[in-house]
Length: 121
Image (tube, rainbow, N blue to C red; front, side, top):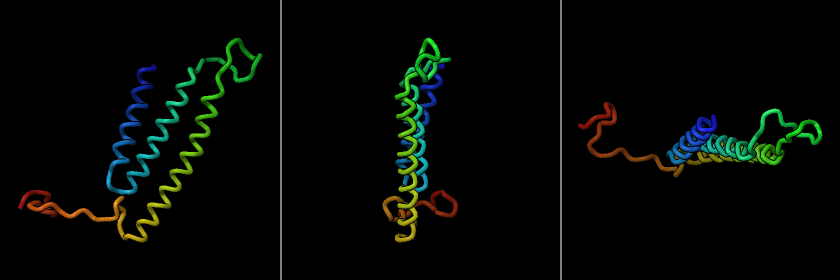
């Protein structure tokens, strides 16, 4: 089970990094969101969670660590604020520049490639 959990966190991280490095602002925002999900899962797993452990002292023999839960809640709030800022920044860049490319410039077509068919001329 731990291996599957680690694989899912790694997959979310890899997809987030891939999308963050793309040239369009929408994929950058989605990549940042996936990275924040991966960080949340990583922080939650770092607390060595136990089954049937109470968060209140004296309610069971083993107690749960409240620190990872507090870190995840803080990371959710920061991730939401970062996503909202990135969306507003992308909307402003789209309005000012007229396109949604991260650097503000539309890539020029490569020579020798037909844009309609995708093949060579």
